[in-house]
Amino acid sequence: VPRRTGHPHDSSPAWSPDSRKIAFVRSGDIYTINLATRALRRLTRSGGFDPSWSPDGTKIAFSRGPTRGREIYVMRADGRGVPRRVTAERGDALSPDWQSSGHDPVIAGAGDIACDPAGRYFNGGAGTKTLCRGQHTANRLLNMDLDKIFALGDDQYTKGTLSQFQQSYDSSWGALRTITAPSVGNHEYRTPSAAGYFDYFNGVDSAAGPAGNRDEGYYSYDVGANWHVVVLNSACGYSGDGGTVPGGCDAGSPQEQWLRADLSANARPCTLAYFHHARFSSAENVRAFWDALYDSGVDLVLNGHDHTYERSAPQTPSGELDRDRGIRQIIVGTGGKSHGPLNSDVPNREVANNDTYGILKLTLRPASYRWEFLPEVGKTFADRGTTNCH
Image 1 (cartoon, rainbow, N blue to C red):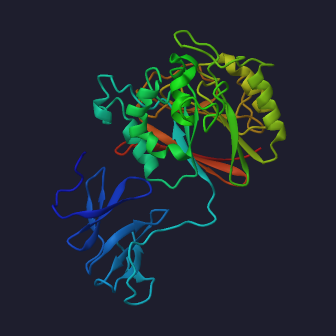
Image 2 (image 1 turned 90 degrees about the horizontal axis):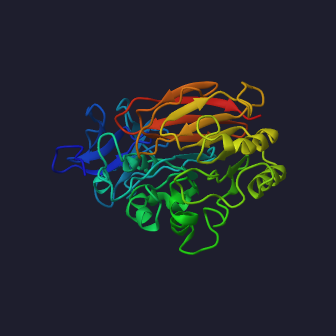
Image 3 (image 1 turned 90 degrees about the vertical axis):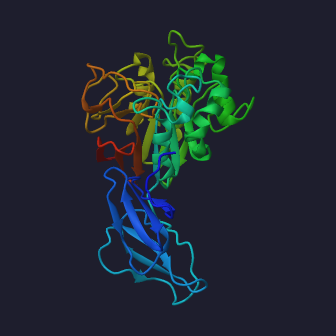
């Protein structure tokens, strides 16, 4: 475990929402430390305990006062201004916490995540400086207030066995399994029928669960009042993998027919879909998915498989720019396993990076979405923007 400060009596650490700083107590006062620059800032000079960041990271709440007589104060996180008392005088208030109200749903995730625990670079889950960084991307998720987490396939290398999930994925991203809506990748199918993947997310031998029906691996769910989410199984037949989704992925397949029926029944104004293989870079055989998604006015598609971050402008299933009805594709294969080369022939690509691990955060507003790529701590690449729903 890396040491972040050098004082023997530092306590009560609290991560900032963007994971770039930690607030903590030293000798009875509140401090913050910037993890990238190691810059230390003292916020209080009259005592303070139990620091807690506001959801937007601009303020810190803390308690102050003698035992059985503490009060809650709020101050700016940059140390400017005077702390403001927000509870009754000498009211014995302890352990402040923030709760946002009326917020837009926030989901986040990535794909291509956890290394094989028997691999040479796993290093007990800590990885190296350039490989097996799943714990570091998980740390970004652990310090966020999320409604749902998406895992974009190849969640566990190399074969996605139950044992590999239990020894690797579970020690990092597994801490948030209860709010994770996963999709399956080709590496999971290197165990026949992706049995380890379904056993891990649904329960051993369970026919259905959070990962969908065991013989399908596709499902949908709603987030908030305005968003519908479709999760598909793009294991449509790849050399070296142990199986495919029953019925395949072509037009007229059970999955494609289910997809069209699900989208037809959806009355919510905004829709996103995610699955492992990207239409524009690695998977021509998901064209039928894109045709159905485009026909129904889907707004956004997320993928993994390529170990890169790539964002494209809205486009048609054939790759023509379409800013009115087109679907934006974002590849987020940056969950930590390794980096890969950028494809050279991706149409309408606007942003690309293949040297930074991180997660994609989506804020799902009533008629739009905001995307933000959050790199692991210490890295600087970022990408953000907002787009209206169709």
